[in-house]
Length: 136
Image (cartoon, rainbow, N blue to C red):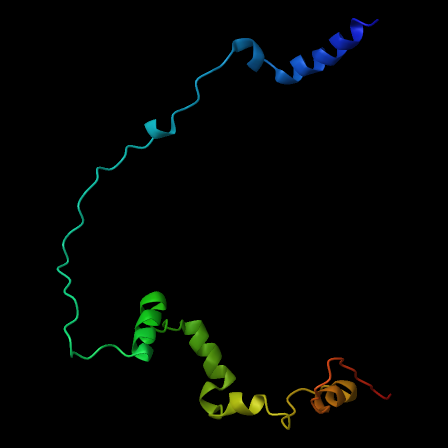
């Protein structure tokens, strides 16, 4: 019985190991044999010259706009469907300051309800604990 217990423990290990234990160590595939390495080349000489003293440099805002232009490009052209949607929505009839007046507390865009309007109209305080009371 004592010899049977170790055999019963080793039998699943051999079964889970499968044939890999019997055939030995096989050679792993060589990943460098698949792709041929390109030869090293010397990059072209761009003949960059350092800036001369006393010349005008690029302002930080101009440099930022150049970087944004280089990263994202200019404005993308609108598709016909988008142009049609904007025209039917009244793009040409929108007031110039519409975005500014949308955040104005006196502008009621959506009926917020009495509780939400009361919370939004509450004066700002310096308390570290926020409380709100709503009467129904």
